[in-house]
Length: 291
Image 1 (tube, rainbow, N blue to C red):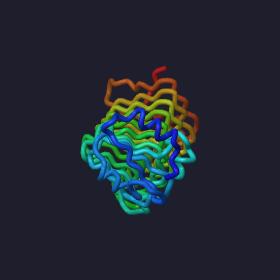
Image 2 (image 1 turned 90 degrees about the vertical axis):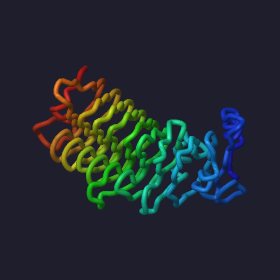
Image 3 (image 1 turned 180 degrees about the vertical axis):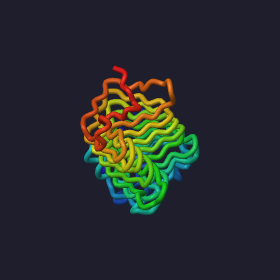
Image 4 (image 1 turned 180 degrees about the horizontal axis):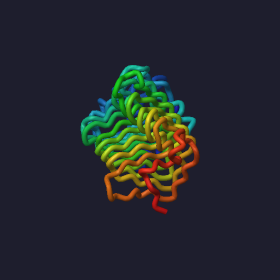
């Protein structure tokens, strides 16, 4: 097992004594050689430590409160080389049994998903996992009519931090991220080069969405909200750069359609260029900014 002793010692110090560290390594004397078998054998509180490899799998957390991690989530080179790849067949990572914030995935490249909802990561029902330090890229559903959330799909609540979400494409809404009826915090993420009909980067409907310290760049919407499209929800954007996004209809940067009488709580927002329709700026008319 090519695992840093320092990493193992740190894990043992922070994990309760009743929990186990399960190691996945196809090339060594590990507990398992694939991720799903390790998840199946785990119990709540366990940590699954995955060595660098290209894993062709579709994985399912199966309702478990576990930590699924690469050997060093804060190292981009490790993240780039610890790959979970659906190889164009279904959802890469599924949460569908009401997983909570103690269900954690961190430090992976998640790619090759092809599904109507959440080709990269799909969170159904009340699932509210924690997603951090992942590269979620090149998941696609633009050939599936009505598809949504090619990168990530939510109908529950979640926290996304330190992730790069790029080059994902949906036929309908939310090429990068789709959330509906959700409470989502998106922090310190790079969301770029995604595409969809509405909300090329992010699409939020009837959701409480807090986006901060993010770069949302070069996303494309066929109709509205190249960077972000929000309808009938509370949208807070702070300390973000929204640059070079475009939309065929309007709101190349942000389109926020809200109910009458409700303010748009956008603070310290930089919107630069990226609007195809000369009738609007980067921020759609229906989304005034409160300084």
